[in-house]
Amino acid sequence: MQDSSCVRAYHRSVYIEDPEKSKAQMGSCKDFNIITLNDNSVQDIISKVQTNGLLEIGLTILYREGFSQLNKPSEFSVFGHCTPMGLMLALTVQPGYTDFCYFSVSDNHWKNKNTPQTFISLLLNGRCRKLCYDAQELIMFLVDKYGFEADQVCLKWLLLDPKVGCWLLDPDHPPGQFADAVHALSLGLEKPSASPNMKTVACHQLQLLSSLTEKLYQQLLKQKLWKIFVDMEMKLLPILAVMELRGILVNKERLKEMENVLEVNKIRRKISFCSCTLDC
Image (tube, rainbow, N blue to C red; front, side):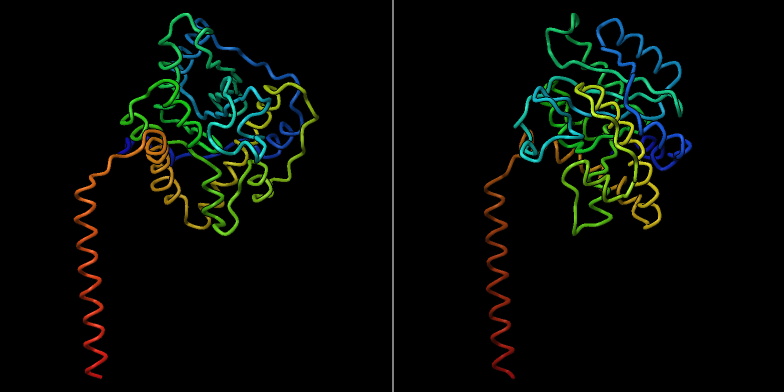
């Protein structure tokens, strides 16, 4: 079972940031102070997290093709069809105070080869809100890249994925891209001015992801779906990610035995039906 304290932390999550202030922030994506993490700056972030804790983490993969998970074209929707270059992180200690960090996944970027895995474990094992659109893809990439143990991933990595939440709200019209989810929840936020800088665009979209998840939380709570979302769907998500990446073992002999049992039951039901028909 997943860490119950982690689950309780999600149920206690309350979004207290002023919506008007958030809306104003969404209207502009210029002048983000982006920290490019290295061995030294990661230690500074770790110390800050251990001292102050974290309220929320937003994560998205950046790809060499020039986009992130939050604005990925539909033709690149299948895992493995584009090349990750790093992660963009939004680390919020308290409302209004967010550090935007770029985390390179290039092995040559890190002097200590254990630093990336240690840092990701600290973030994803924590009890704060962790937000990612299409979290299954993120989990599969991190497990494949850094070799995290399945037990750790399945028991501790509880992320909130608005893609799944929007599907719960409207199963007949599940969102594909992040923009679909924004439209489905009718956020009505201004689009930022165009920027050629992929990292800057990702920072704006991570802000939007936070506002989207806040509204999703309210809608799921209203329809009594929040506990299903957190306790069922989000617990299954890392398990499905590991299963898809690593596969599952099947006992063929046992499977054959089950097939035989089902076939016998099928024949018995058919005989029983025929007997009833003749009696009538």
